[in-house]
Length: 138
Image (cartoon, rainbow, N blue to C red; front, side):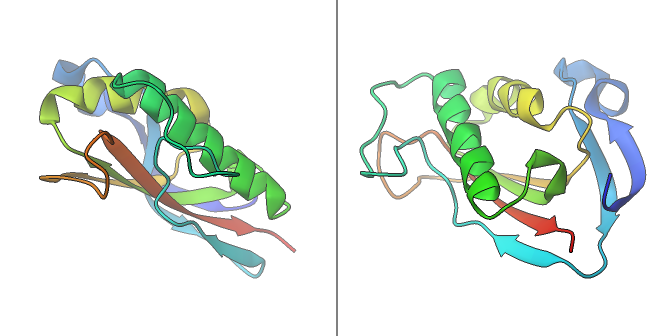
């Protein structure tokens, strides 16, 4: 892996009561490279900004993570270059579904993660928004 991940952990061990299996870490050290700051990704198409037709947090999170993956790849990188995510959800009851789904995309990557429960997102149909930062090595 291109970056140094400090204090890797898996949420299944750290938070056993939450029934999650995400690979995260406390810090990521990068050197050189190209930094990619992603806009908060929502459950909509990148090409036309049309929302997906779903009110399911799992389906919305899949779309969000697919967008993140696509944008990093368009910048010349891959998901292993993801160093930080910030997860916004509108209902704490969706937390496990959202994080479990996100975990499918970050398995073995170990980005730093911050999670917030917010009152609302920019569109009332959105249940999740995730922004990220990637560093693509030289």
